[in-house]
Length: 314
Image (cartoon, rainbow, N blue to C red):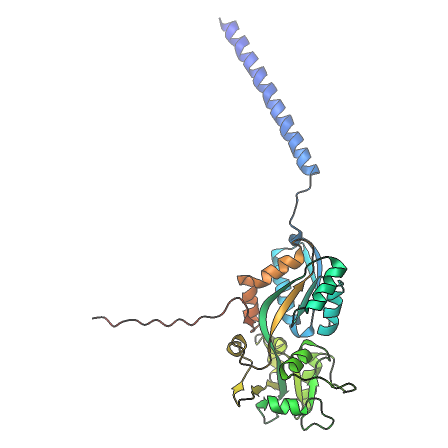
């Protein structure tokens, strides 16, 4: 009897061992297959992208890119500066996948791009910005009127010297569009080459007025900006009705400041790649908080003031 039980136990052990070995072999084979088969990843989670930006929007584009790369460490985003008109031309020629500018493509430009790439481009507004007028803190004026700007901007002997960052930049386009100005052929537009040089110029010439983007000076927590604002000030604008508006978030949100504009991200990309992921992030709550941190007006998140009327206790 004992021998029969022992033989039965031995047979059970052998059978169990055999099954266990087969299970281990199967698991080992599955692990080998898993190692051979690459894990599929979303296209917006890895790779490289160059974002072309008008210099006015460089700070915002860079801040968004830095946070996106924190979320996706295998993504590398480079920021390339190019003035708006040149950048838009390169974009609708299909040379640029993602672009930060102050306006969308025209219908003709959209059609040209589609004929080149067979891709329907996407434009997304992510923030409200402005072209601003700056002058030395030693200049006694605190505001300038639209009328004065229009009467002096492209004149041979202006009463006020205006200095742009770039000709054909987002700021140049914004001013001309809002004032409905056409620059006469052969007109010399005074431009320094970048916003930092404009700031240096007006620091040294108290009568000069520089035209740059709000985002250049909007981040009041940046030590570089703090130093700039010791030497230059942002002028308020007197509109055609005599009302005075500064480029505050409130005045941008409701379009009161005469030279406000929208910041567009233009995307020309197949599938949901880094460009699409970055654009979606820029419009998300976290992305819009970065816009707020830059002291610009978010496009999707407006601050709401709530008033509670509480009845007195009886």
